[in-house]
View 1 (cartoon, one colour):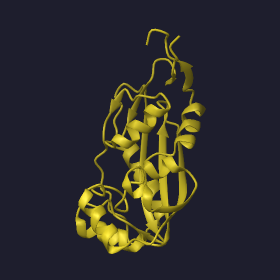
View 2 (view 1 turned 30 degrees about the vertical axis):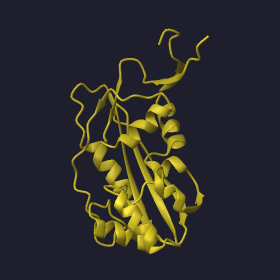
View 3 (view 1 turned 135 degrees about the vertical axis):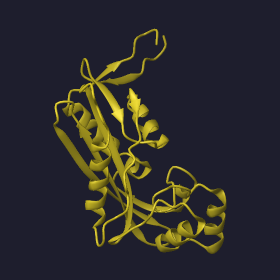
View 4 (view 1 turned 180 degrees about the horizontal axis):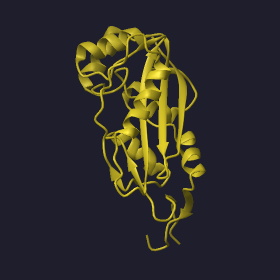
Length: 209
């Protein structure tokens, strides 16, 4: 007898829009049996405001992404998220150049930092629920050779703080306090609770699926 997997279904007559281009978020949602009916990356200005605190910035980004998605039929849930890496009050960029990535890795080397994951879920009737989840991550002290090798891998490209914990950078993590999936890109326990609160239900897939 073949094992059946659990899937997550939206309430009858509704659909789910994922306001993100991140393949990591799609993979994490698939982990809990949820596949978005539509993927529509939100195009918003992600420049932090002057002296903006990381938590407020993360929440503003998730809310802005959700608000940027249009739902003409009025029957879609909209799920938006943003991941921010912060060292103290300093918001680290989603690195696009080796110079940016090197600066981030040198800053994080041997230090504790925070990963803030903001999630916004909008109901078709206009209700909204949001969460900001914070995970503390401590890196080992990185040698110049380790930084050079990691930069050469290209794994840092487009990643908040210049690293991907689910890849080789996982070997640099000496301690982690909080949600691991939050660091990957979406805090699953909190996201599932939000979906469950809005009527999404977990069922077993059909036997012939």
